[in-house]
Image (cartoon, rainbow, N blue to C red; front, side, top):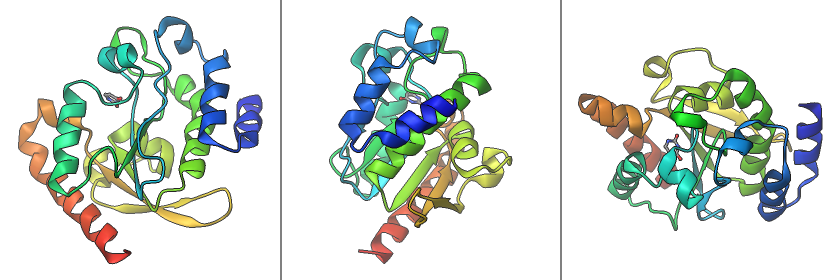
Length: 199
Ligand code: URA
């Protein structure tokens, strides 16, 4: 893990980080996944969404949020004027866990230096954590997502600058619990307002 963090910190571009991950053999998930799922969207964007882990569709395509969750995420982004040219999208774990099981705490811990470096290199103004694993991994909160959602947590970049990390519900959860979409809608309006307040 020390090794992964030191190596990740040496990478000076997203391309270099992606290449490092392509060769990284320290996470068992890479041996069962078809593809590395590094990112989609625009790395220059002001906002970066971070999900949990790729599923079957993402594993096949090699890009995050390609399946039903991705279609819902696209609609939620569109509702506040965002799309994949104006947002950057990644996951806390860049390989599909077999059979779509949840990534283990150990797998998340192994991959954490990489997503943290990816965030630092993309340098967004606002981070959006989709669901509990992303929120807990990136903000350090131990609260459940229904408590944490709607809040902007401080997120400190390696250079010491603080950005904001908005916790919200994961689109896969919203597909199972559509009644909760009104909560996500509140969060996305808050995201829109935060973006508008700093243009
Ligand atoms: N769910 C996620 O968390 N990430 C994806 O890329 C797809 C589904």
